Length: 234
Image 1 (tube, one colour):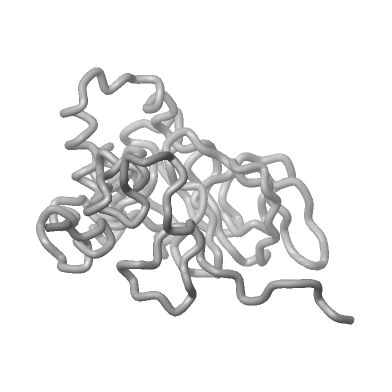
Image 2 (tube, one colour):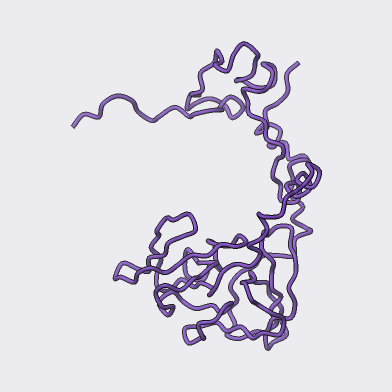
């Protein structure tokens, strides 16, 4: 008797594929208050970078992604007139070209969506009438609205990828904390009863790698059929 595919097992919502989000510290976003002070640096399993606990004049405490060279007790500023200093949050139109930024907003006021993982940073390369051009860590250039906010500096925790896991158990708990399935086994390495690509005959299986567009979720594995084929008529 065969077993369900991974995407079929995930759909049941069992604890195996459920993230421990109740154990996370919380969401890290740009605040709405102009000034704050760093009171602590904490670890969160849901983030690859360390987080800052920032206290504001009204005694509220919010989380923010920590940049390099940050320290407890340092004051953080937010706004168009804030100083160009690591950790401060400014709109892109107020940041000079060539400055390294992180936690960039896709839309003004969303709290930051891009460049949030440890050790990453983006660079402002140009300001035009169309918007602010930023080169992302993937080397791709993207244009943002001038009102989108970003934090100054580079995300802390750049040495995370240099530390080896040493054993599979450590990697297992690391992936389980963020609902990442591990280990990942390719379909052609499985048995025929476990996956449509499985079997021991050869690496080239009897079933094609291109699945129909109207196939059910359990069958739609491999490449999805194109919307059209053949030469486009002018």
